[in-house]
Every structure is written in C-alpha cells, then in structure tokens.
Image (cartoon, rainbow, N blue to C red; front, side):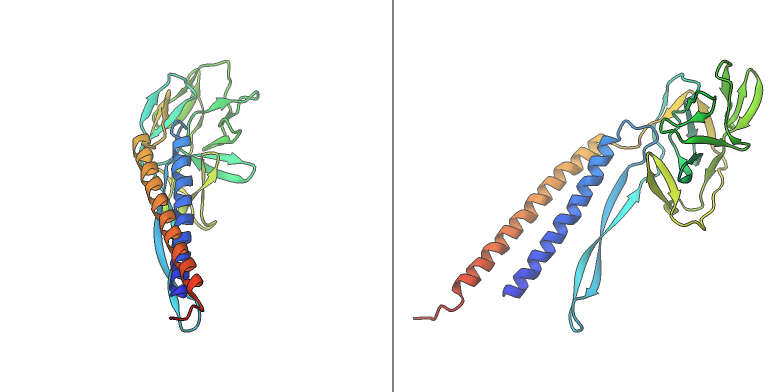
Length: 244
C-alpha cells in the first residue's frame, strides 16, 4: 500500500512541475501581448515509458514547447521605419551571437545611419547591413527595396525555412535554427508593408482562460497530494498495532 501511495505522490508532484512550466508560458505570452512580432508559445504534455529497475517500468511526464507562427494583426503606425511582412518570412538581423531572424519590424536608425532593432541588432539587406541617410526621405516598396530620395540603397533580406518547427526562440524576440545545418531560403510571396507593425499573435482572452484552468488543475493536484499524505500517515500509525 505504501509503495503504491508513494508512486502516486511522485506522479502528482511531476504533474505540478509540468503545470508550473505551462503557467510560465502563459504568463510570458500575456507579458508580451503588446510586443511587436511576438509569437505565442504553448506547452503540450507527453508521456514516456522508462525503466525504474530491470523488472519495472513506469510512465513519466515530458513537456513539448510549441511556437505558434501564425501572423499577427497588422497595425498602421505611419512611421516610415516601421515595417511588417504580409505572408511567410522573417527579417534577417545580425547580433553579437550571430545571424538571427525576427518578425518584429519596429526599426530605428543609429547615429551612423544603420537600420537596427531597438535591442541593437543590425538589419541585414541583400547588400549587407542597411545604411541610410537619416536626413532624407526613406521609402520601402512592397518588394523590400529601400530608397532615399528615389535612390535605391539596399533591399531587405526576407527569408524563411522549409519547416518553421526547425526554429527556436533565441531571446529578445529573435529566432535561430535548432541546428547549424538548417539553411534559410528566400521567402516567396512575402509582401513588405511600410508604416505598419505586426502585432503579437497572443489572444489575451484565451490566455486568461488558460490561467483559470491552470488554477483549478493545480488545486486538484494539491488535494490529491494531501489525500495521499493522509493515507501514508494512517498506514504508518497502524504499523505494529496487533489486533485485540
């Protein structure tokens, strides 16, 4: 009896830990509901069979974090340095850690005229880092060509991947391939929209509903642990008591 109760306790604790990870993801989604280009994450629960001893196996809990790459709503800002991608594709940027990819197009100009993200990542064009004269009018057409006073200076490098599941988040609203062997490719059919920002694809109502469900599930597991603890205490208190 005690061995079975202990196994139930382990299962309940593992479930609580998994639910905690799910809570972290929901909280992160809500915190980034207003972050340009943010892609929400969800957690799925898998079960895996593994050996406890040579002769016994049991089921354990595993987590699988999925990124939803659906396009967010386009919001017009009128800022000529705000750029959104309608369709499949990512902006290519350079960071101290290497090349990264993002859907966040809320760009700005540095003191030396480089087009950058707010975190300092340099936006890469087909001819290298994009540099424009901040004193001139900047226009970006649907194909991503960047012009100043009618003179084309570069073109945004819009790329994608054969399978978006091969990308993982790299912090600061950036993505990177899971493996160095995964190669980028030109994004076909992508349309660049100047003066627009792609908003987060987080649905706050859905996330708040998940928070309520998580609270209830967490309470249920806590009650289960309390019940198992009471059973164990009862079993221990009766050990050695002889029937009269």
